[in-house]
Amino acid sequence: MNPKTITVLIAEDHTIVREGMRALLASETDIQIVAEAENGRDAVKLALSIRPDVILMDIAMPILNGMEATRQILAAAPSMRVLVLSAHSDDAYVEHVIALGAAGYLLKQSSSSMLAKAIREVYGGRSCFTPSLFKHMRRRGKLSQIASDLHAPDLRLTSRELEVLQLVAEGNANKEIADLMHISIRTVEKHRHQVMKKLDLPNTASLTRYAIAHGIIESSVQVTIL
Image 1 (cartoon, one colour):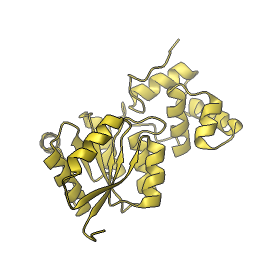
Image 2 (cartoon, rainbow, N blue to C red; image 1 turned 135 degrees about the vertical axis):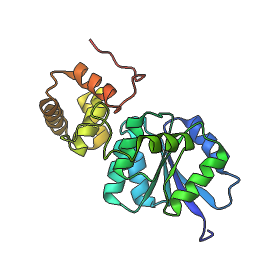
Image 3 (cartoon, rainbow, N blue to C red; image 1 turned 180 degrees about the vertical axis):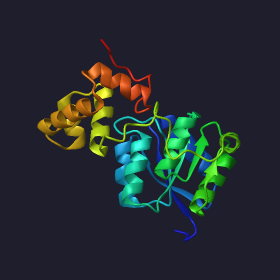
């Protein structure tokens, strides 16, 4: 491998989008896609085992969303470079992932040349934003330290509790969550109880509403709220 080649991990749950990014970057001789993940949990595992130069991170992913995946990756490897590639242009999303330590934020409608340039920029130690987002943030002044209370996940929750919250909100039963997280059902129940206690929420429906309101899952996730 050419020592100047930038290794990239794509974390994106839609196969057609991953294929599109792979095709867009295929002609870039200094960029090589070395791994792909279709959920946040796999993204964390691959990032920490392969140690790519740059991670292209989607926000809305199943099992573990991109925000929490970014937090876990950078907590374990602070020097790793995460470039968020998302359809969300909301201030809260942008500010939150930057507060977590992401190196840049690119909208999915960006051109292939902009994507390649952004990868090179963050690899080089710089920050990179979609131009429209950057102009908006400059008009607002410097980024707040964290996103607005409406969207930022509650900081009282541990990383494990946030994972359980997302999996519960996605409609997984305790046994399914236990299997996914490789923990016991009793531990799942304990985490679930702690989440409900900390957030003062009485049932699964309220947990799901909370997860949607705070951007932990998308409202398009098919769940039943009674």
